Length: 123
View 1 (cartoon, rainbow, N blue to C red):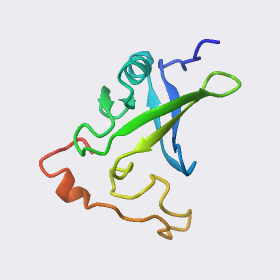
View 2 (cartoon, helix red, strand yellow):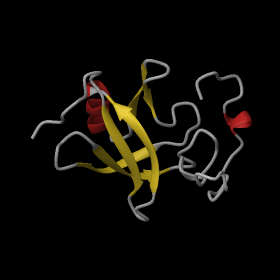
View 3 (spheres, rainbow, N blue to C red):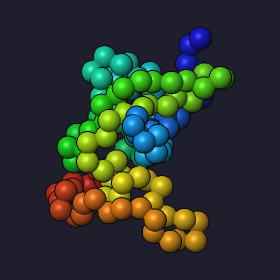
């Protein structure tokens, strides 16, 4: 079955560490991003805020090597199972889901975003 993109031409992508199965992040992809991901073997997404395509790690070097792509039963959500190089979150944490609803930090800080993204307005 084909991927079902929403009215904006996007599909949600859950990113999961292939070995640990930890959820690293959630992003969105359009057709072009999915095609680039499949052809290059590295995760590509569509940034809704910047309105442009981006390769994960293009600025930080924290890339996501694709191991496998899964689709859900309705074909309207994907899972990218990846080998993560560095931290997946632009805040420097080991997951974008690094804090509880109450604000408790439960993730591990892996880098300082002010250092990694110095001079960049794209994080």
